[in-house]
Image 1 (cartoon, one colour):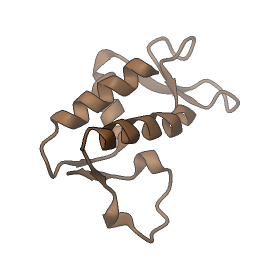
Image 2 (spheres, rainbow, N blue to C red):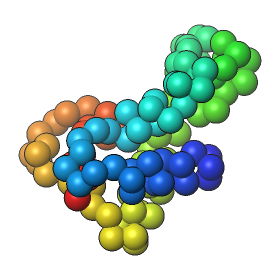
Image 3 (cartoon, helix red, strand yellow):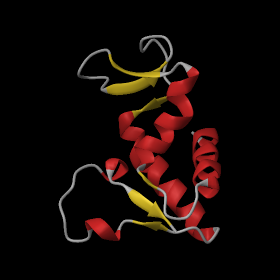
Image 4 (cartoon, rainbow, N blue to C red):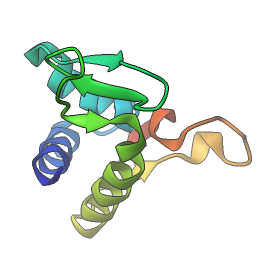
Amino acid sequence: MKEIVEKMITYIKELPVGAELSIREVFDELYLSQGYRWVCRNAGDGWMCSKDDGATYLLREEDFFQVQEEVEDSLEKAGVMLDYSKWDGMCVGMPYYVTFVRR
């Protein structure tokens, strides 16, 4: 997971100020182009990003909570702000699908 987080941090740092996307979109930009896709083998396993139809996986959807926390903490320390203020006071769903503006 460390490598995923580091790639996402680098990607976000390179975004122009004002770019708007979500943590999930960043991940998808980095990995879907490499042949990974989201699969759900069964309800117990949930969704996972895999190159081999779920026999092995790179990341499970539930891992995004940890990924988001680590990415946001590292970027904050580096002085990069992810602005979610457009969603203040709203109930909008899973946090990793909520768009931010790179500041």
